[in-house]
Image (cartoon, rainbow, N blue to C red):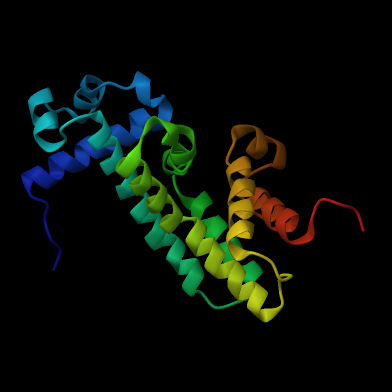
Length: 197
């Protein structure tokens, strides 16, 4: 039986969707609560009723997005197959997301120094849960089966993610020719290196 959203839940969803658009396209400092209220088609009073300030809204928007991604990437962790197969699946799942959703992955790296203390720790943890930990689990399994040379799975996961973030750029996609080519480029570079045989 499908559940229907309450009016408050629908309003919050509209606000978070508007926040994704604005923060995905512009720097944190350049986005105002008025911009988000306008795009969400809510009053500023309604916006502040649900989110006490821009920081709270940003954190809610990004943690929601990262939790959605964590659930999606868990499919690759749980999938059968080789390490390469599962890394390929995780990267393809990322490229299957709408561009605006892919762009949000870069926000933690771009904006993390804006935040301090608990807020910063919360965003870092949400990012790690969504991306590095899933990739680390896949790479550790590859190390355990001998598909990947022994090494620090956490460090290797961060390196893999860095490669993926590079191919998310417009330049890389234009140069490589599309999502499938980007996925194969990352896999080959990560697993085989850039040197000639």
